[in-house]
Length: 345
Image (cartoon, rainbow, N blue to C red):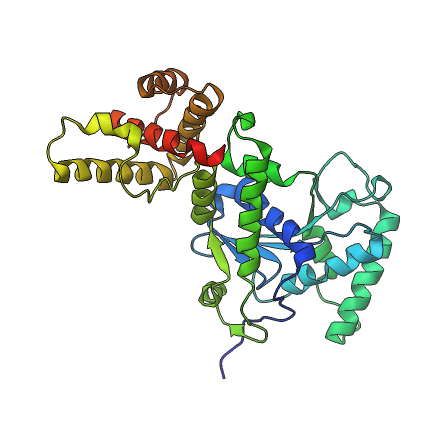
């Protein structure tokens, strides 16, 4: 008889009240942690509310997301249960994080930090948290002495959400000048990502079992970081950057002396391929975002309509241009962003 590694229980179809917070925790994993570059995909409502995973599943982050307006110690203890259950499971998660609203200052030794360990919680509050958590564990597992209880408390982390929806999108995009796009655009992008995240729950996996963590992919409850980044950049510039059909109108003058239609199509395909290489290559991705930011600033804030002027500003202000982006590819990208401008205004 084969060993069951993990059984999914207490999964949700949807929960409107929690969906904003779960989307925030997903974006937190993707773009707001020192190790976010290791996160390659997000898993929704399987092991927990949200999980991040590296490409090979060698590292998995575990997040329980709670958005309580009233969050006393007993509720905190209750909220830690799924994280504890995962801690004693056969899967070795890299981190166990409770993503929550700010706790009361009176509960904390240092209220100024947003990400902290259990020892930042005052002892009298800890006792009330532990009493509730212990009672739930004993009841659900029918045991008198929960294993690894203290070990879990030493490992669990707390992240207090103090950001607006738009701030999460800004952080993931990595734009330094976040004012180049109106906040309502960032909010709309967040809402679209939240809706996609919620739609991933529209399947029934209760009671399903897996033997290896990566087998969770067969349930199609995941989204990749690349998909999230691609959506954000396409929405920010008002156009599908990597799958745009046709030739952007501002790019036409640069095709006049190319040759026949086949040559022009080859040129456009080369530009698209170069954009994709620059965006999807981990070594140049951050520089690609900076290039896009600079173009958006020229086109949206300064209302620059001359491609050569935008290109000059770009080459002057951006020290590192991705190696894949030659002059023609940059002109094509500028043309795309000019074409998409009307869609984000």
